[in-house]
Length: 372
Image: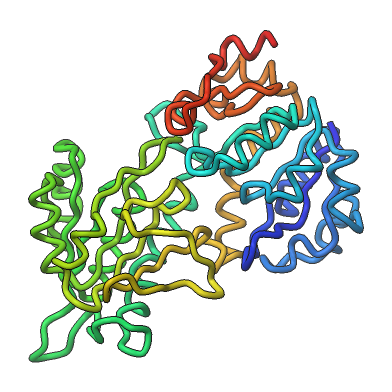
């Protein structure tokens, strides 16, 4: 199979979809790999690194989209990229369609087969292609939250760890999954007073057993969430419903009950955000003020640490990419139900139920899509 990897064009996105090691692996399996020139620069990979791995270099993204049978990316295809997709082509990348009607409609119109990293599953019920970026975003969230809290950025002017005689920042992490756990570990490591909220009692027990000495846990009822949020200097939104739009956990009206200058970091922004006042921002202009509450809602947080993120993502996606190339998407998905759950769009049909519900679009069962 001919695999192509264009340079990411989303603002301030420095990751790349295929590492030189992944390219080398694909070539060893008998496939050809083409990388757009400069695609790996932001993650510290040169064109020569890819050439040494056996890949070829293309001057433009248009060349790659025109010739490759499978396109491997990091972020969802931007409007200009979606216009270059074609019927029968495989797109393997993050999509986050539930919050993006325009992208969904363009992908349906393209006729391409689109497999989303964020809905591929594993035997433990996890999301193995989302987890590496969730780990990165979770660990970044307290760092960017601490920066947002600085007075020069509009925040409360509170230091995460405090100093002798002055208490630490109070941090509330809503969601105890991969993002929330990593965020809580780092925030606690910075010396903050941290509480993690979740609705799963087994998860709360696990967090309490493993991390009980580092941070507190609490049940995420609406009342409890609001009571703790009113006391917080920093609130990190880390709630995920796989493939679906994120639930709104704090409303616009409730902002008035928060501490003036408190910071909200919305790690769920790719899925529409978990605060009513959230809107996607970029690393170039990451924060904004709503009613005196500072919002950090960068939609590609892991792009800030592009090398770490690219290698971590490449480690996770490479086996699936090789399976798709070796077997073709149909056979690969027939033989791996977890990969089949990644199928979001095929031949003009939406194939992921949570996206269909969010956007009110009819959905074709992915099992039936295998026969189309």
